[in-house]
Image 1 (cartoon, rainbow, N blue to C red):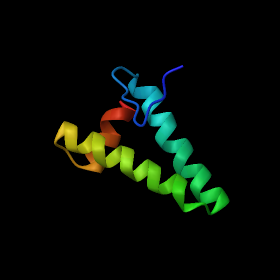
Image 2 (cartoon, helix red, strand yellow):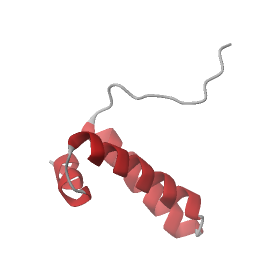
Image 3 (tube, one colour):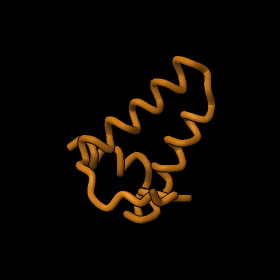
Image 4 (cartoon, rainbow, N blue to C red):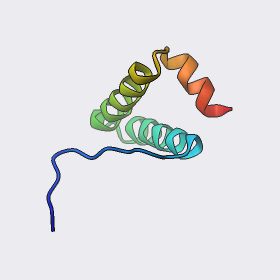
Length: 64
């Protein structure tokens, strides 16, 4: 078995990505575990950087 330090997601549906982000936010708020919120923010920041857009615009795009 190969071990990975990083994993790259090449293709994932907009719906699935939105569900992942919302699940991380819900879990972070419900459990008061900041690492879930930090992970959500990190993923969202990276996606916004790639798309060259704001978080608000990117989330609206995912919801369409």
